[in-house]
Each structure stands twice: as C-alpha cells, then as structure tokens.
Length: 277
Image 1 (cartoon, rainbow, N blue to C red):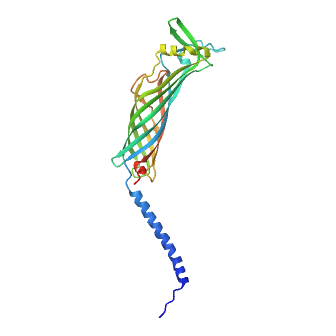
Image 2: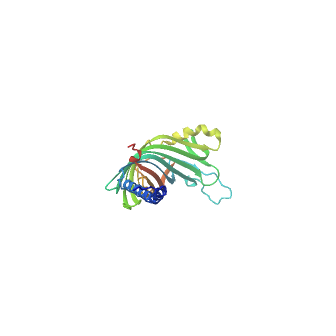
C-alpha cells in the first residue's frame, strides 16, 4: 500500500504548531527571568552620591564692621556687625561602598567624599561697608563690598541605616546616622574691596585677624531616606538630611554657622553587575 505525503499537510501542520512553539519560548523566557529574579542580591554595592546644605549664621567675632551713613534714615546707630549678613552653602560628592546584613535590614556605608564650603558676607543695605581693622598704625577703615571664603575638604564618612518599612518591597524607607572626619585640601579667604588699589592690603588684614580655618574637621549627622530597588539590584536613594553637628571648632572663619537641613541623592549597584562570569 503506497502512502503519499501532501506538501499542503506539512505546511498546514507547521502553521498549527507555530503558536505552541511561541508559547513554549515565552514560557521558557519567563522561567529564566523568574529564576534570575529569585537569585539573592549581592550584599556588596558600590555607587556615587551628591548632597548639599545651606548655611546661615552670625558674623564671627574676629570681624567688625561699620555701616556708612544712609541719607534719610531714621536709624541713629549704624555701627556694628548686625548691619552685615552672612550666608553660604555646602556641596559634596563622593564614591561609596555598601554592605548589608540582617536580611538587608541594616546597611553600613563608607567611602571617600569631597566637600566644598562657600561663605559670603555682604551689607544688608547700601553697596559697601567699612571694615574696622586695628593695626600697628592705629585704627583703619577699609571700604569693602563684602568677603568670601571657599574651602575644600576630603573626608571619610562612616554611616549606618536601618529599614523602617518595605523589606519585601522595591520601595523602602530608612533612618540613617553617620559620622565623618576629613582634612582641608585647599582654602581661600578674600576681601572684595571697593577700590582695586586696596587689594594689596587684603592678605595683611586676614593675617592680623587670625583667619585660618582648622585643617581637620569631624561632624555627625542623620537623615531620613526613601529608596527604590530596581530588578537588577540598582538602588536609587533620596534623603532629607538633618543639619550636621560639627564636633570640632574653627572650621569656618567668616561665620559662626547655623547649618540648615539639606538633601542627598545616591545610586548604588551590586558588585555582581561587574562580574564577567
């Protein structure tokens, strides 16, 4: 008995089997993806961060100013540093490593951080102020438009954060506390004179006032954060940071600072992302 195979039968059969093949491939891909997600995340991570704070405060006692007379002003006492305002900001960035324990509830962090501090002193009214400067020749007054200070520090932070909620979620809330020690790597304090001819006196005035920021600093801080964990283990974090408390003195020379709250953002990646295996 002879059997004939029809080409139409083969084509038709292949068309009927195509959906089952696609379904099988889809199930296979889903299985592989699920298995990858079930793999435990590495407790080690590396990343980058950026944060900032605002500075307010009184003028340091080593500086004394006199405000020029203002026409049509009813104020009778126009002397004293209360006529001068001071403000500034802190910006920092760095690289860090993280290590999680206790089922990822507790995370320890350290790294290397660069901190840039800017301060400005300016008159509250008018275009200039008199800087009261005692010298060997007597009392001198210099007309200045303001003062500035720019400091750079390299520091090593030690931090720990603990989960408040979201252990089994990709959204997590946490509480953080940290301490940081560092050393000054550059700094400059300058006077902005009204007349360029007076610039030559700037260094002598600053030296006489004893304006020399300390070379080392140590501070502590805390914050409250929100973290998003992506499927590949990358962590995106945003934090509201409380004002830092400086355990050392003489960190700034223009202001007796009152630090305001700030914010910080960071991205960390599990070390397995860099594995070639």
